[in-house]
Image 1 (cartoon, rainbow, N blue to C red):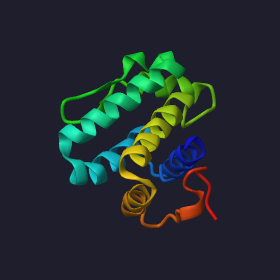
Image 2: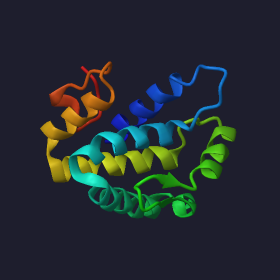
Image 3: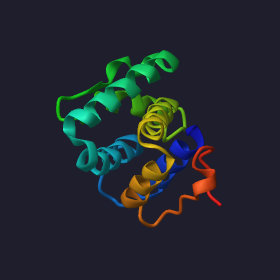
Image 4: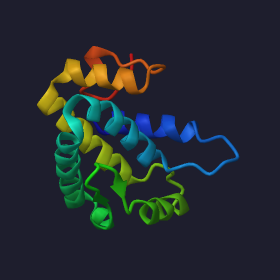
Length: 140
């Protein structure tokens, strides 16, 4: 899942080629997941999954302690963390990769691989997600 998370963050970082300042790649990936999954499981269901993903991520990356999941499921407090990673020449940031990987892992665990892939295809219609490679986060 970590490879898939990295690929999604890299894709979103590449989409940030406008002159307008945009949200961080992690927040954009997170918001796409929140939007497509929120339609499926509702705000409360997504909040539960995201909160669990954040809790699991904090054990690997203590810098995520400043982040939190709001009642509406939005991710808050990640801005300062991501700025620190950008200074270290890692635009996606390990914290962002770990958080998204944990969220994707929980989706696969609770929804199954096929439904998780379907949600990803809806959120990123231009991207190809091969059924055989989702577990490893690779494209065919």
